[in-house]
Image (cartoon, rainbow, N blue to C red):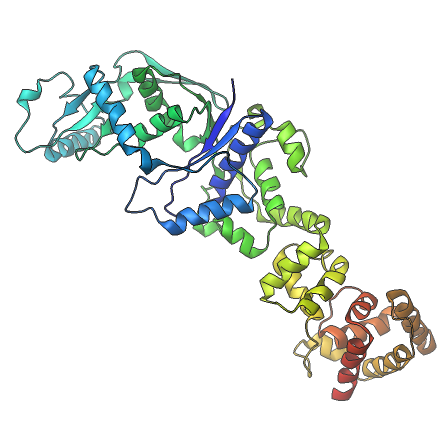
Length: 464
């Protein structure tokens, strides 16, 4: 059997981070078993579906490198097929027309509310002669579901889950205007696409029982279900807007790398021993549904940031330089080259691309005097400014402009003044960057080049 999984988002908004994890789990399971990973856009809600949301989903999937097999399947393209299945069930006596009026349905809701139970259709048209139909009422089509016994789901994550059939009413397959419902469309699509494993959030677990009944009515094999717990916020409540960024594109804008996001999402509800940092190849080799926990996971931005810092340090310098430049709106090739040459010092401290972009500004333009940073300005007063002047003179005599030679010259200035190296390096840092924090001043000057470095030091002295 070829394993076939699918990711089936609705294009009514961005690609939610929980949806991204569902896509990742489906992708990994398919790749682990040499199967197919399919993408289906469930766009049957025309009022809420947008082209922008569709584009955001596809863009988010591409950013996370979750490639799908074959063409994108748009659910709305197959509405006629969905309706045909319902009509076939009607002909086989496995579905029926229901002519309930809106008033009758409202009466059922009020009765259920008064009795403290969920609303369930009472089946009044299940075996009734259609000739009794009231005039002017367009019927819906309902599944004639089993009323006794139990529906059983052998879930790959939740285990064996059962529900009494008496608790499930006859669900609607076709609305009164003839359009198929979500429940019908999902089952028909999964069957027609050959889906063998449905891996999704456990908020769909209740749907699985009804879908299982529909599979049985159609005479089709039910796919294996695996319902994964939802992601909660740090406070234990369901992840929502108040917990921070939710869309995949927001995490990219904040400055997280896709490999870090995927690694974090993988470990958010799945484990492989004590392993925390897991490469894509390792994830494909190790992923299984047995490792998925049954309890919700809490999203921890601090952990994601630390993990992202690890991937930042491992990332290619040219790639990071371009990401930083993009975040800065920078197109100057010379400045981008400088950022790349200084990347070893920049990325050691950065947790996100935004951090990287902030600190990379040192290689784009010099500070403006007088300095706004009070601590840095204090370093350039009195003896500090005199040390910068002496260092500039020593550096001006260098013919070999490299970090080791620059450091040697500064050490000589410090020794001559009877000071530690840091006492000279700190005012130099303020003069070069306008800040008290930067990569090694020797590395910074080597990357800037002799002319630019000395120009900045002179500007600092002149302003004093």
